[in-house]
Amino acid sequence: MTSHLALLVAFAFISSLANLALADRKTCDEFSELHITLERNATDGDTEVVFFAKGQDDGLKKLVITNPRGRSVGAFEGDRRGIGIREFVLESAEPEDLDLVLASFPAGDYRFLGKAVTNDCLRGTATLSHVLAPETTLLTPAADSTVNVEDVVLGWAAVAQATQYVVELNNEDSGAEFTFQVFPPQTSFEVPASIIEPGSEYQFVVGVRTANGNLTFVEHAFFTAEE
Image (cartoon, rainbow, N blue to C red; front, side, top):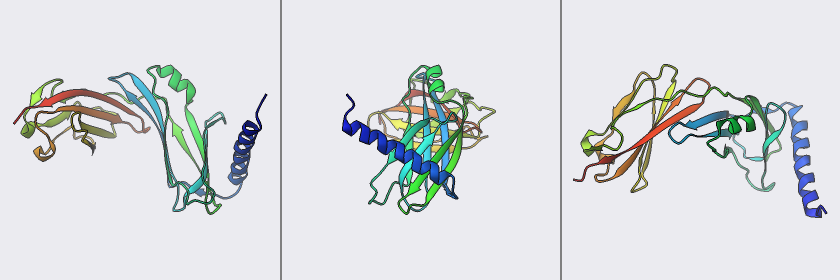
């Protein structure tokens, strides 16, 4: 038998959707930023979908995201008396089955509807493409090589479709992480020795971003020599 609590939760969720649907029929402000990214790790073989939504100055107390088929893929309802949430990052699970990811999140326009703590409404759309970004090849340092801290030059092969390279350097021992935004035609840069630790294992990652916003990463490890 369905419990009264379950019925109340279901009713609250349906009411939230209905209220936002009404808001969608009136004049609403736009979200300040919306995007959906298909992110693939070509080295590990996993893929995820990342939703990003940023409201205006006031926080949101409600947010609903629907896919191109009109089905809800996410709904948030916060404290009605609080200051609300202004920025959302939602990440899907990341299985190695690419077809399963694509089937769960069809390509096309996703609709975002939000309600601010001021009762003003926000709406907007972001497009998910199923066209995967190509991958690059990491060149230097070579995989599993050992280099001096003064000689850490991160290099990778150029990708014609790239609009941006997202470069990550992670110290597996200390947990220190660095992210660099690099734009074509640049495909390498020298890392300052002041931020490199000797005798450490590093994970070197480069993601290729294309015009549709999607990202494909490749990664490998290298080591720094002891002092």
